[in-house]
Amino acid sequence: MLEILMAGGWAMLPILLCSAIALAIILERFWTLRRRAVMPPGLGDQVRTWARSRKLDPEHLQALRDNSPLGELLAGALAVRNRSRDIVKERIEDTGRHVVHRLERFLNTLGTIALISPLLGLLGTVIGLIRMFLAVMVNGVGDPLKMAGGIGEALVCTATGLVVAIPAYALHRYFRSRVAGYVVEMEQQATLLLDELTAPVEPAVASAPAPARVAR
Image 1 (cartoon, rainbow, N blue to C red):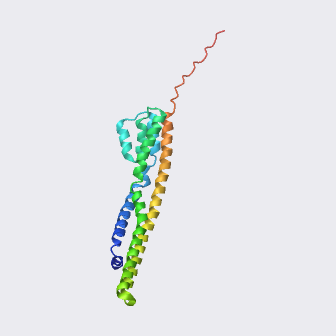
Image 2: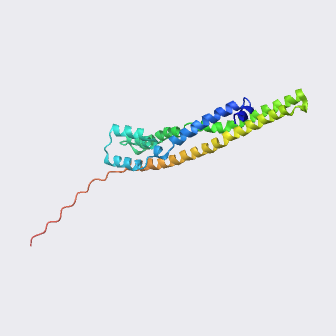
Image 3: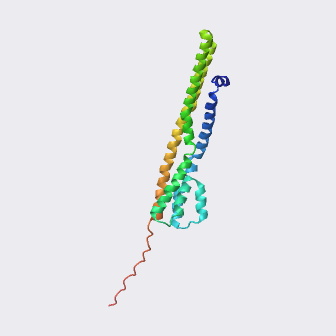
């Protein structure tokens, strides 16, 4: 296997570097984008219960903010819970942009690797073909070993570039769709909390006294 990779020439070095970076990103994103880490089960119901009780202190909010991306989004709304609905909604949108940016961390890099890996393989192919034609120009067609070496370098670079690019592109699309699904669910939870925070408080209705009987 090492001999095959070495046959690809110097163009294999950036391709192998891209493969190492892509593998690190994939493992990190699989760990970070676990559902339990992004949207802990039951967190939305628990936060709405806190909001209903109207008993929230800074310690609760900080713990919620550090809990998960969903907790950070809901904590942003709770921080301005005493303001108008428009202000609470604006805070949710601002916090949501920061949360989504962190959820999409490194995905642009993974997409770039999926794009440039075939191009690097194509570059190695072109270099291998150039070496082959130069060998033919110098030695003629009587030395098949040098021609085979150039063709082999071209094929190895092309294949390696595709091997790196195909899974990188597929997982890039997978992570994108996973983040999009999380965003939709977090929007739903934020909307429910917004309705809870801005719901009018109904005053307690006192029971009317029973009418006194008139003595006959």
